[in-house]
Length: 189
Image 1 (cartoon, rainbow, N blue to C red):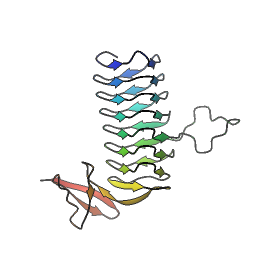
Image 2: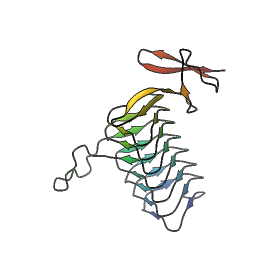
Image 3: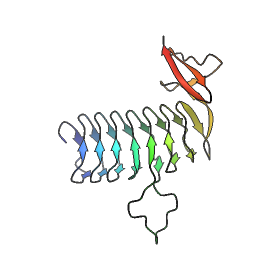
């Protein structure tokens, strides 16, 4: 845990790995066995569960708990107060004792403020989940999702802009094509 910043009000359990350049701000708790990559930012009051893996360049805003069973790949953005679950049928009097549904957030995906990601699903690469949405199924790469439950409204570019029109070319120069029901990046001008 050298070459990173951890605010004095945060608590880091033993056996935690935090990468170079990562900043852990006020009132965070990182539990045993968690691995956090380089150049990440954990805002105020973030909880990282036991054994959670977080890639490089991840931004987790204030008041987010990343529970055991959740994996965040590189360059994921978690908006303020977004919610992850890790048990599909929780009961206080029937604990699951470490058997958690796996949730994977793929590289470059963005999760809006106050959205909820129901466990057991994968959020695709560079997908964008709208603020307040509730994700109850897998999300395709580059999908723009919003609502309760979240529905696909269209596609977004890797840079985050909404793709419109038949050409599926973004103003940033990236271009895409539909392959069945999936969007595939084909190049950058």
